[in-house]
Length: 247
Image (cartoon, rainbow, N blue to C red; front, side, top):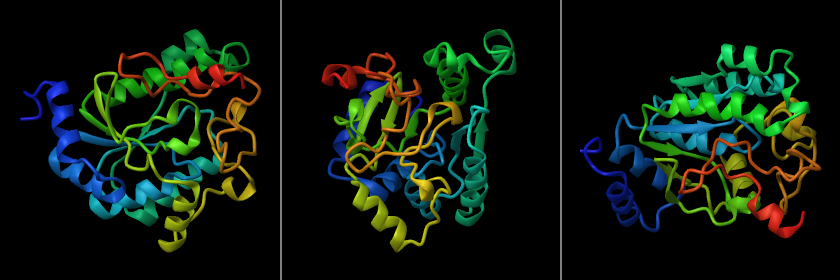
């Protein structure tokens, strides 16, 4: 049924049938509604344990797409192993950039110094698009309180031809901390060192707050997104709100 249903009709049906749901309840209903067509996107970052835990209790066999840019902190890679084991996740897929793309466009591994957008394109956008092809519905852990283009997140939307589910959209920093504490979830090692948002080593610094948790990502630039998230018309979500605010 899912394969033969136009995406716009499927979106409308999901929005109507899941109205008022969020968090674990939304995740459970979506997975049940489209078995075999759903994947979770996870950075295994500072707040990722919450959504990963929800999924582990609902379906630990759900595919988890983890983007390994080959520029990540070793602490993040260790955290992936830790959470995968502790939560019993059975299908964590390490999505990596194409070696040929890197050989052509970033042979010295320093493209980020000259064009952060191009670096993100080859190390994130291209491999993630390829990894998502077999799925119709993608679950993401983005939150409105992160600001910039995320302030208007819908729980269910259409982005780049995929149904996007944002079960934690309305969660606050306090909600996330309370969930992690109540379920005794381990923190990312760098979160304990003051990193509120964790990406690649060259473009991440410690810092951030409840009001601006992503302050340490691409600090001092207009860039706010890496390029793996898209608007309804397929354009990369990156700098709209930050530019408008003059930050």
